[in-house]
Image 1 (tube, rainbow, N blue to C red):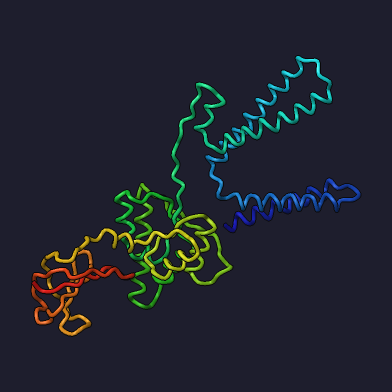
Image 2 (image 1 turned 45 degrees about the horizontal axis):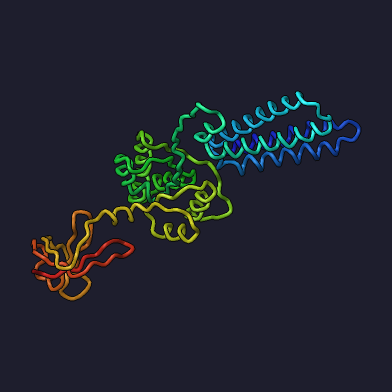
Length: 324
């Protein structure tokens, strides 16, 4: 990102200097023109980041096609005895019309060009352009690798530089748990880079308008028109409030957990006491917490239970049961 800003600055300086050199005895006007044009081009280039190469090539092809058709029509006017002033006016309007038609057809996509060129069909190529900004919690969690291996998620993963710096800071921490989390996150990134279904890209774009990492991730995703992949509940809520698409791994896991209906029976091993009196708690293989009423005396044993109700909380699903 720094090299790109240097290139933009050099471009502005060169255009400004060029305007000054062509200004002659009064160089100030062309200097200002050179500076204004270069700044306008840099602003346009910055705003045009979301334009895909496929869309740009289709648009350019449409404009060229419109100019060719306008040239053919204008040459045909020479076959008729028409005054020059009328010919010039007609050629101008015809050029504008054909360029407009070519531009609109180009924006509709390559598959539409067979309408203006019969018997020529451009093969439509699907290019994966979906981008997903990955946050620190999602990387450390590690389940992202398993999801990618299944092939359900194919995208370009954007890892911001400030997230990478956060992982390095954790890996260098004196706290053992933080150091292990940082090292695990870095290993997960190396594993993701080896997966064929995705592309991992490090983004050097600086977000200086906000300070917290969560706010930077949301702002970066908004600027890029990308989604956010996370396991952080607070980041999830902040992004949704600002209208940013969020892919929460915890939501995916909860959606894949088995559903239970009242009266359904199964067996489970009770592990510990519950919050309420005489409650016992067990866990299913997917981590779902099962609360058993009046079963405190059965802790450590395998018991048969019957479902009373199911509660879906932000942290996961809780199944309330009773002993059979």
